[in-house]
Image (cartoon, rainbow, N blue to C red; front, top):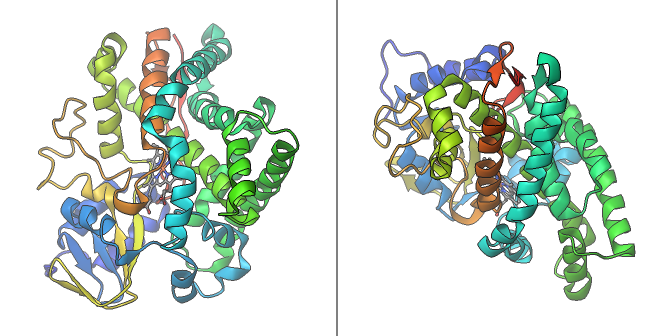
Length: 410
Ligand code: HEM
């Protein structure tokens, strides 16, 4: 399947991808990987997918499992000593059926298209507040870091409002949430989970207190609704409830933060597209999709074969890990003409970034609506918005995004 010859060894490409320079700009390395094929088989030990169709089919294949506790027992012995993965494997993302189905059923109706539409006025009002906050910070041509002051503040404002997290607590959660996402990167040694463990412990403590306080005074927020349903039906344990509320917080804060920051950076790099976004509300959905395709907040997803199987001609033995390099799939030239060109008007643009199949992002409609609302508002409010330094990226591969995005507001 893979071509050989003068190409760099795929295992070496992976190592370079995981080095700090690779994480800053992984895209050339995905092309080196793609040169070996749409599926790259490291001697049966690990398979990487770089192709769009290959990733898309894997996401919809029930016998390719998400990383649950049983999978981790094989992949990462010793993980049970680490609170990051103990909590992660209790949420729907890192579960398989029957638990996954049970969790998804419990939480999914809260995020229906109808709910998302009903939240639009709240989202617009939070966007307005955050943009005015940026205006205050940016007065007198002061430099503002948009990652913290716009992207995180807005994303956390939205999920905080929905879950009933007090406004004064939200911004302080940035550090713990960022720390948790580091547990998703490949590791060489279990000690590399310490940062994720510490973040998870802090968030768990916070969420236990949140659930306890909501339970004492149930309100109209989603946390109260989840507590009511749990206490009535017993469908979830208390720990499962807390684990999935933690997932909702992390998922709705971190990836949307990165999407928003990337949208702003790409708008600043492409002034013509930015003007279209300012002038025409109909341009926003295409801009969101193209940002998700071109520079995705989630770069890779892991699956494991539940049985021996044939996958596009590659034999996957039961237990074989498969890494879907969805950021590479999003630039597959068989699927997207001129994949390296940022084109918000691209037709039939369906990036892999929100996943697909059973684990399709539960917050996809919310994430789109929120991004379509906030970024055009920011650009309209500040016609002179400009970079005030080089944006930096965090030292992470899986959940990739800007560490800083310094701007002046004009
Ligand atoms: C740009 C924004 C977002 C991106 C790129 C994103 C990406 C993803 C991806 C890739 C998955 C599936 C992972 C897999 O298949 O292994 C996922 C699942 C999930 N997302 Fe999102 N997400 C975003 C926003 C949100 C928001 C706003 C929420 C809040 C409600 C959310 C909640 C979830 C949940 C609960 C799951 C687990 C679904 C399941 O396992 O059944 N996400 N997301």
